[in-house]
Length: 90
Image 1 (spheres, rainbow, N blue to C red):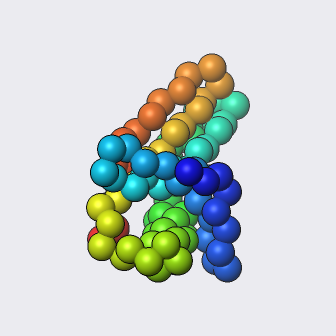
Image 2 (tube, one colour):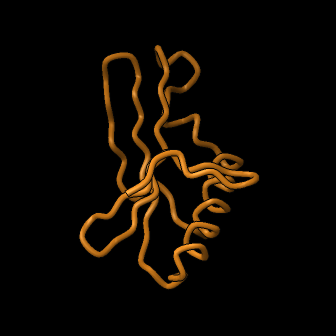
């Protein structure tokens, strides 16, 4: 649906639909896993910025009650991992 949705204080790499669910996707890439890898780089601060951008997006489309989830696509070197429902909005 959309790539690189930006608002002040946050950005969402990909906004997509999976059947009736709106999916906010964060894509992270690391050359290796020396410092915990790509998935580990989505910490509390990054999640807060994603939540802020997602709330803004939902208000902009006029459907704050739409079911949504947060996925992470983690790329470590040649390895790609898609983590569905990686974290919640709480």
